[in-house]
Image 1 (cartoon, rainbow, N blue to C red):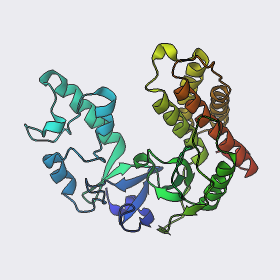
Image 2: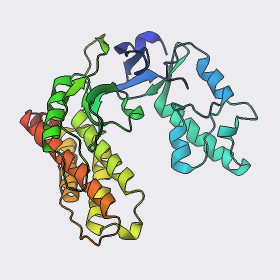
Image 3: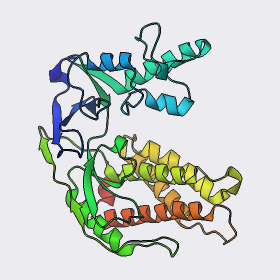
Image 4: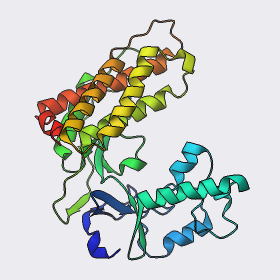
Length: 317
């Protein structure tokens, strides 16, 4: 496609050793797109670099665009234009190759575009985020991050909501700890990271409150992974499944009526998880209580947004 069809909307420059020295996001077909990151963590801006990296097959390439397919299916999905003998990280058994290629093709068609020979991937624009519930260092920093590469961060706020993110961080500090089993540090002020942000045009940023439900589901899911299925209380499991369904649809809903219904479903699921209690003899009790605590923080987030007067606006989006 021509460059004019996907103009640059946002440019960010991070300090040294903090993030990519430079990254930009284009807006095209109601979605944001950014250049892929190299294995070294810098934006790939030169045409032909993507193809060279595919041939080299660097196993440490964290932004490899077909990585989700590897994780989800346990079978590497080789790009469809590789030579006959792909690198080891993309090799599949002969009987699986057709399926791997089909899945890679589907990912490429949905999540990748080419602008003047440079490959871009579908991506949320950068967001402000700060650490999780249990922090032991002596400072808390609000960071501007790329959400898909910030699994250790939590509590994401849109690019234009830096002040709100700082306010919520302050509320969090005064409400923690959630229980007596968690070692909690002293209260330290949250400082915002210094970055250079440039807006090239007026764009509507994605709904960060809706995204917070997706993040809550993912955090709870990660915490529950070590728990035996038979040890998961049925009420927590049912609420967790409902949260996953509602949060995923919430970020994709177009009509205001669907958004309002799904928003209500997500809030109800979070409330159900937060209300779970466990006897002292409950197997994996520590993991289960951490999952409940994550849901409680999401309740605080909803209360915070209500205080900001955003709930009605969100329901109408």
